[in-house]
Length: 342
Image 1 (cartoon, one colour):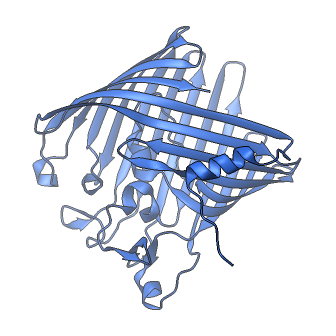
Image 2 (tube, rainbow, N blue to C red):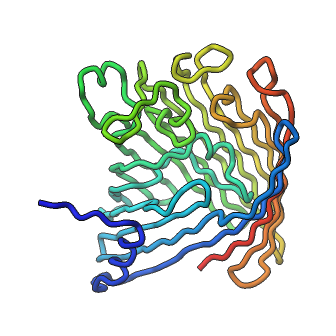
Image 3 (cartoon, helix red, strand yellow):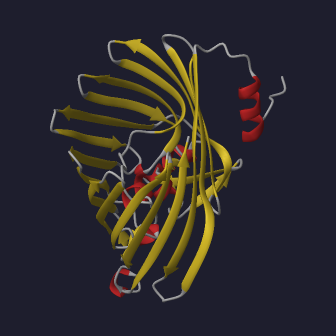
């Protein structure tokens, strides 16, 4: 039987033209245009205007137990128009649910008040086709998931096997009162080498049947922790993502096996007309990932019209020292963003 393949635009057209059997259908999206001005570690200046992000999401409640989620994304100079997520969710009752499809697995939270993505996200965000069992009730939220990642142990590769060997666990608790909200969470992934920020920087990546894979002596686990506190107009975000050690031939730091980590700390304040935030981010043993050692940044946002926001961010980066393989210099970036949501 011939398998029909559709581009993201054709898939969207088919979805919109299909009979509406669902009891509920919601379409949402966002467009972000950015003007950036920067100076790198060698004081070379750059500037550009980009269509930074276009997102379109369709959420459908099929029946009382089943829902579907489809999202498309385009990021100029980074991601061509593609299916970002495609998820079928089953409500099993009593707080239990099952999700299957391409999704961002629950490793890390990555909430931020800034225009740019935090270094924690750049290191740890992971999109995979996975099967997930979740639980959410009385403020507790947890999940376990499995997937077949792009990293593979050398012994498994030599046997010609390609199986579901990757998994993760996420647990957390949300607290809410009249005065504050607090969310804390701890996540584990069995192979942090499959995160979007690490996989592409592993040495020894090969192409097999059109797919990039990376062989590892053994899978390297990772952990993430977040603490998000809101009280009146104030918000505080703290998050840390940490990897165990790779082999030096896989991911190195100062000729040794790297154990990269990233931390994000932010303080925000919401006004009637907008919000402002200041943040400090740092990494360790992450030079091979192309991340700075430290980043100090602040942002301010203003809702100029309904669902239309104008934001400004200034970030100052410090590179790793010469002894650590870097330049020991600093750079900066200023970003003006106009965003609409619908």
